Image 1: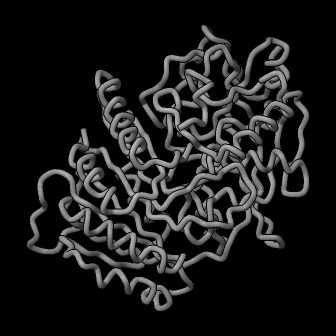
Image 2 (image 1 turned 45 degrees about the vertical axis):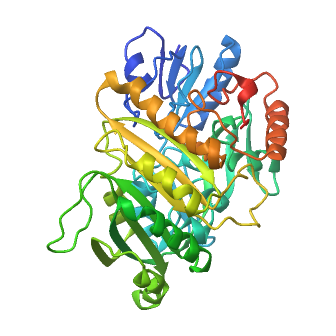
Amino acid sequence: MNQFKGTFVRRGEARYEELRVGHMFNQRVTTRKPAAVLLAADEEDVVAGVRLAARNGWQVSVRAGGHSWANWGIRDDALLIDLVAMKDMRFDPSTNIATVTPAVAGATELDPFLAQRGRFFPVGHCESVGLGGFLLQGGQGWHLRHYGWSCESIESIDVVLADGSTVRASADENPDLFWVARGAGPGFPGVITRFHLKTYPRPVLVMDTRTFRLEDLDELLAWQQAILPTLDSRVEPILIATRLDTPLDEGVERPNGTVLLLHTTAAGESEAEITPLLTDFDSCPVRSLGHVRAVTTIGEQNRLLAQSNPEGFRWAVDTTWTDAVAVELGPALRKMWADLPTERTWSMWYGWTPRSDLPDMALSIEGLGNIATYVCYENPDDDERLADWVHGATGELAARFGKGVYIGDSDFSHRPDRFVSDEHFARLREIRQARDPEGRFCGYLIDDESKLNAR
C-alpha cells in the first residue's frame, strides 16, 4: 500500500526517468540511478521516506530546485527525496519573518511575494534557483556586500533527522544543525523542510552598466580593486566576460570576441540617496564602449541575468576564491577570458570585501574576489571537452592564486578543492557523525573522500 501522499516510484517503474531528471536545470544530467524517487507532498512524506530508506538500507539524497550544476541530489542506489512539489510561503508582519519551503524559487516566487509586503530578502541572481540548495551552500544573494551571505539571514530551520524525528534548529536550539545549515551544502545531515527567514525593508535599486574591451582588463581590474574597499557596502560591482551583446553607445562598433561588462547595482531608500554612491564609477580611468544607468528592480535584474542563464542548456561550471592583485591576476584572467569556448559561456570576477566578523557558521572561505565560469552549450558530444576546459582553466588559476571554492559553483567529482576552513571541516565531520552515525544521508559527490576539503 502506498504510504505517501506524493508520488513514489522505484527504479524501472513508470515515470521513474521523468522524476529522476525531469526538472533539472542543467541538461548535462548524470547517468546515476537512485533506487527510488519520492516526490514528497509534505513533511510527513519526508519523514516516511527517511524511515523507508532506513528499512531498505538505502541512503537518502535530497533535491529542491534542481539547480545543482553537479546534480548533487542524484545518487546511485539511494532514495531521492525531491521537494519540488512542496511550495509554501508565509509572512508574519509582527516579526517580519518569512517562512518558506526549500523548493520556493527566490527570485520568481519569494521576491514578488515579499514585494507586495514592502519587504526584501537577498535572493539569488539566477531567477529559478530554489532556496534549499542556495541557502545550504551559503547563498550569493543580491547585495551580499551589505546584507551578508543569504544564509546569515536564516532565523531557524525545521529538520527531519536520520531517525525520522523532526526538530527545529536555530542559534539557541540545536545550534550544531544551525551551524552546518549555513554553508555546508550537500553535507547537511538531514532534510530541511522549512526555512524561517529574516526580511528587510525593500530598497530602491539603481543599475550602472558599462562595456569595455577585453584588452582593458588589467587597468580596469586594478581600478576596481583600488576603489572596492572604499565603496559603500550597498554598492555591488561585478565584472563579467561575455561574448553576448552588451550596451554600446551610439555609433560604437562592438569588438569581436569577448568583451567586459561592469554591471553595478546600488541599493538605498531613494534614487537621490543612491546616485552619490556611484560617484567613483564616473571617474573610471578606462573609456567605456557603452554606458547605461537607470532605476531598476530585483525582478528586472533577475530577468536580465536570465539571458546569461537560459533554460534548456547543458552547463559545466567551476570557481575559485583569490586574493591575487590585478598585476598578477589580470594577464592570467585575460588569457582565460579570451578563450571562452562557446557563445553563451560567461565568466565573472565578483569583487569582495572579505569580512573579519563572519558569524560562527560552516561557511568560512572568502577572498578579495570570486572567479566563477559558466560554460553553456547544447551538444552532448561536447560534454567531456567543455568540462575539461572549465575545470582545467579554473584549476590553473586556483593552483597559482586560489584560496578555495564557493561550493555552490563547484563539482567535486571533477575538481575538488577546499570549501571551508580546516577547523570548520573538522567540526563539520564531528557533527555529521554525531547526527547521522550510519551515514543515512548522502554527502559530497567526490570520487576520493581523502581529497575532500584538500587543496
